[in-house]
Image (cartoon, rainbow over all chains, first blue to last red; front, side, top):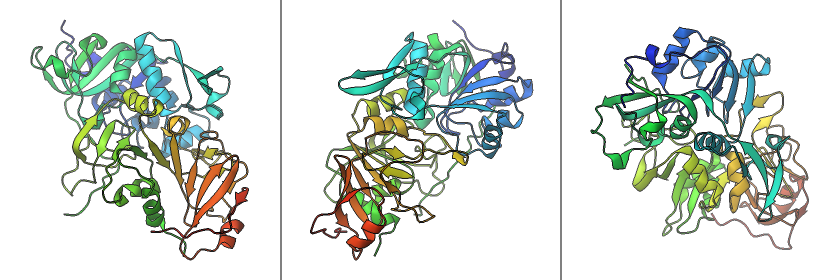
Length: 231
Length: 218
């Protein structure tokens, strides 16, 4: 099944105001930068974005925040973005902060047909407010529900025409779970190859989870905290 | 004399045991990796999806696709592995990681920890901290004894929104090593040259002080 689309414009067709989007990445690592640029061009508004972080002021999801395209963010850590903080404190932006492991598992559950699960993370904190508590093995757990999205937008290193994906190093992060949880999943890849080129043993995300795939024109891959040692 | 950040990290490194998988938080905890005692092998896990983290890369060898949870560029050691975020937290929640070291704004005498939010002032998010403290068997908090205003961070009860309840077992500060047991802090060691009186005066929570408090050996 050929999933290839020619460009980000075609790939993101159908995304409308008010929709819920999952966007892969951890910090600026493994984010679908070509698709984010296209979302800015499209000018879609009132989005709910599920993403571990919110980018920085002038890159990643920060670009959507600059254009006030996001109504609600569901994230675990948003510390690197001044505009985000301003919009949150002024009440313009609704923010749902959830523990990182719960966020990952909620996406995975959404893609795996598991409506909810119990986790110890967040018990006794603000995160547990309004959630069912149950004791397992003598320890309290809270009920967390699955997350799904109208569109999931992920970034992979290599992909083939069938939508099979391979990620590189820590750019994998949330991308595989989000690919599973999108009603429509769009993958942008650095290198798009014909089916049969990738070793089936090495596939991280099987093509069944991907509806549209395209090769990104360029990847800036900005580094958030360049840390080096001297030789 | 009170320890500096490296001193705190060095003391915590003495708690490492051979064969442990360890998750280090951002800040002082990251420095622990610099002081692994000789003859001990540990492997560092970073919750963004890596086991077997190595040192920072040499200038010019940074890979934007290879970072730690603090978003710093890193390298990998032989035998490292990469995985997705759900697998990463399966390791953490499933108690496959033996030790978590993290920073805190406040710790209370029953082991509660607060480190993610100051209402009205700072809201960065909890990241992986809530998952880590809810599940880790061993949690060591690395922090300064007092905040910038000079107020004790070692409290009867936390005043800030909690990250986890009843989970912290040990606290290492620039002044002391404290253990939390049966709802009280116990003074185990003092920093070289630091008096027991100073530690008592800077600790708001209930503190059990034995007759003899040894100095840290660092």
